[in-house]
Image (tube, rainbow, N blue to C red; front, side, top):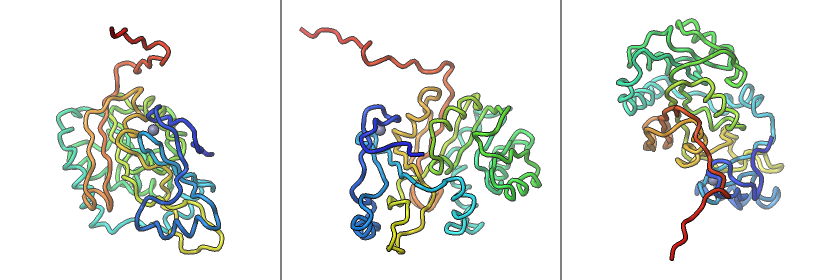
Length: 282
Ligand SMILES: [Zn+2]
């Protein structure tokens, strides 16, 4: 599906409009962008004029791409580097320890369970209270062997799961319909949501252009959030308690937006624009 097209209203900030970009904004990819422009027209990349959310319209089957191609082009980092990133991440959010006593957890896109293991160690959480959700059957089986209960399915398909804390690290940028995802998160999550997404990386055309083989492989990122669009996505049901932008090589290769959001007691009421009344200024 194509979530946003040129001149569509932005569903994140509800103020701007998506504009198709004329060339990649990333300096390193400008050269490639020029090449892409000639034969293939404009890149399939859109950015909101207000909140600067970026949407890359991938024309293939995104689920299939992630299942079959993605890891061939982007293998996971070496274990030592992953542990370094995870430990930095846990240090940056360690204040949550004062709020999560007795809570249950659900991690979406838990991979091989390494983060789950480190999280439980750090915060002294029993594995029975930490559920993992992972679509890849091999990784899910590996995580189950470590003693976690694992839902081996896509998060949108998982039923009858509730948790006090929902964790989604470097997951959202790979999902096309992030609005359905946010709704489901709000159904599942009772107290706290922990999200991490990359700040804009490659802004090249995610689709191949015939005749040009030197376009870098698609990194699976269909969304690049700004700190505004990331908060706005969950705004109906969650309010921000902590927002942070990490340094390059701190918790990932590039900078990351981190959010910790608290579930609202009631869904936020939206005041329709026509009902806002302004006092006369005389
Ligand atoms: Zn916007």
